Amino acid sequence: MAFTHPEYLVDTEWLATHLDDPTLRILDCTITVHDDQGQEQGRGFRVESGEQVWRQGHIPGSGFADLVHDLSDPDGSFPFAAPSAERFAAAMSRYGVGDGTRVILYDAFLNVCAARMWWLLRAFGFDNAAVLSGGWTKWTKEGRPASTAPSAHPPGHFTARPRPQFIAKKQEVFAAINKPGTLLVNALNPEDFAGTTPPRYSRPGHIPSSVNVPFTSLVDPETQAYLPEEQLRAKFAAVGATSQQQVITYCAVGFTACSDAFVLSLLGVENLAMYDGSLTEWTADPAMPMVTGS
Image 1 (spheres, rainbow, N blue to C red):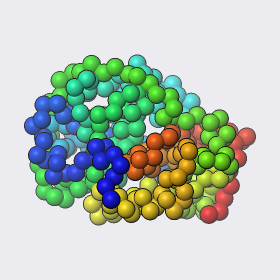
Image 2 (image 1 turned 30 degrees about the horizontal axis):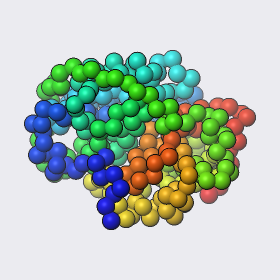
Image 3 (image 1 turned 135 degrees about the horizontal axis):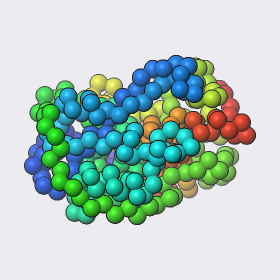
Image 4 (image 1 turned 180 degrees about the vertical axis):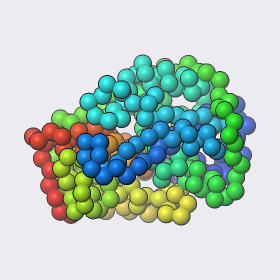
């Protein structure tokens, strides 16, 4: 069975044959994650822009989309909060994205950053974007060309058309706990979900009534390409995510939650939101409940 929305995903072979398409805007969205256990408000990790990695080698013709600086709110109440519509539109215009362009997104981190960028584009009203399955990892494993040249994308004119329903707020998530027809999906690994490992946020465990579909389980560990449709559908169907009236995904800081949301979109689940603050915001508020165990 094919994905309900195959247009959201492209493979390396397709991209290799379309590198010269003047309407394409290829964007590397990579971030780098460093283990800083006990540092930075106890989150246990530090996220940096992957721009320097992009400068060392990238898909020919691609530009760099900076999710840490350009595409986050510098005054947000939690790290890497989605930017304002004006900030997002200005960045995308600099990247060459606008009417008449198609955006191809990739990264070197299990498609997580590409999925985050894809979700932000949708949240700001742009639908003509796709994720490169396997990203930089699969591209280089196949021996495809790389470049260190600057972006070839001319500036564009991006018009933001915000869709606030795509990004859930804390009180919406609280209201969704044990709500019939609504499912909360945690995208972290099983140990983080159960609270058996030191948390990267203030308190261990997960939001009550939520289920767990780890983002790492969605890809082939060797190529980082997404698993076949039937395997992905089975994973989400097993926790009831394909039969709900509404699904809200969350994680630690709103990145890996986008992987789950992206795959659910591929599968045709439409009433979806991603909790941007995720457990970094949630666990900082002692009034918000957490539970441990699987």
